[in-house]
Length: 338
Length: 249
Image 1 (tube, chains in turn red, purple):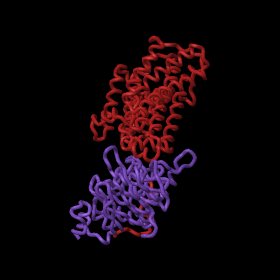
Image 2 (tube, rainbow over the protein chains, first blue to last red):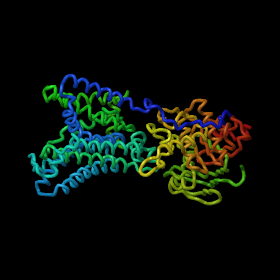
Image 3 (cartoon, rainbow over the protein chains, first blue to last red):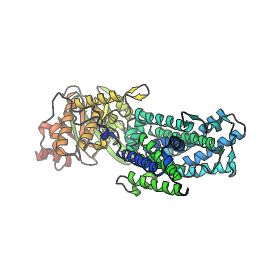
Image 4 (cartoon, rainbow over the protein chains, first blue to last red):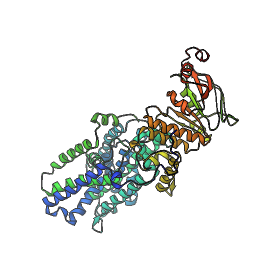
């Protein structure tokens, strides 16, 4: 038999070059980002000023915080459409609790717990009751926003500017807003969790072949539930920060927010079918969605153009992300029972 | 070989409702032996192996492992007795790299983090020992050939240091050169003293690596012969029961 008996190792633990490792979709989007910055920099003089960049960071922050968590959800092959509604619910809850005279620190904890709770509801229904996450979160999107509207009867609830929570929305460190710093912390935490821990490995593995991971003795249902809880928690943070920044809580905030978040994640190169998640890509994707909105505003075009462009960008992103598979494959993937 | 058997199965039966899938199977396996398990579709090979791997519980009969009677209630029980199985679907994750797949579910850790350096070093050692040919442990499984994937799956099972290793159709749908690599690997594994049970439809593979062949027919073990006493025509006759083996021979 021709079995090689050479003493030299047949397999090397050799790191391939960065080009081989790099997610090509992410790389392409990094190039797009550079082009966008160059284009808007030429088109609008103040686009590249420090003030505008700092402003841009603040605008991107809330999307980015939720996009970090959504990266985990999408990488496991799931989706969460309810984050926009959770943002509204928590924003309303924050304003109502402050109005009722609760202490700010207590309100912050309650707001985060509320987000986590909705994430847990999504996660339990999707992972343990085996209802496709697309369906679960579509239904919960309606339920959660409905509750927020019922609570406020449609009115916006103002927040006293002197309260600690309201000050978070205006605080600045080293020229950047507290929101931007919180987003940076979320990105670092998410990147480490995804790339350096067992949890991150299983998230990728589940998106690729869940049964293989399950047979390796991993509780995959629990991991899928945790990713949806992370999304809920992140939406809770986003809701709190939205209320703090706007100085009010409205049941109508965060409309279409889930689309912006999903667009950011998918634009960055995270595979919509799961199995391949990139946190760097998510940052790039969030920046692109932010830059487009910010740049269009500076160019003084109609504000109604922004949602049109955002929607078209999402469509383009999904188109690129399909990588040769058809849209019906995606539809089948999203509503399958896992 | 041929001394004290590692595994002995006696009169194993198993019914699924009204269907009697196993009607009394006898089988023995010695350490370091490669046993070929053959039979037509529906003869009960896979069910028998699932019994041995703990994935299916038998109704009656006896499993003896190293002289002790054992009974597996779950795959974890069988794994604890160091019985390894590689199913046809391999249980790999395409988007993870070779090392991550090899250590899936038991990644070495440093504090809360996966110790990637150690994981890749150990993976390279394990694979090199088995003469697996993969360029790098950082390669994604999805980018490997069928033979390489099979080799990684076997290496993964071997890294649990099994006493018994069951391989279900490891050479189905592989290119010729890849079949040779997998067969060489099976011999390597057996040379370490592991008892290997090979299920395959490729009869020529049996003659290359097996020491002995057990034939199953309609839920029974009907023949058990050393490979040296067989040729391919006789083996085919034994599997299809077209006349008794003696008549053909």
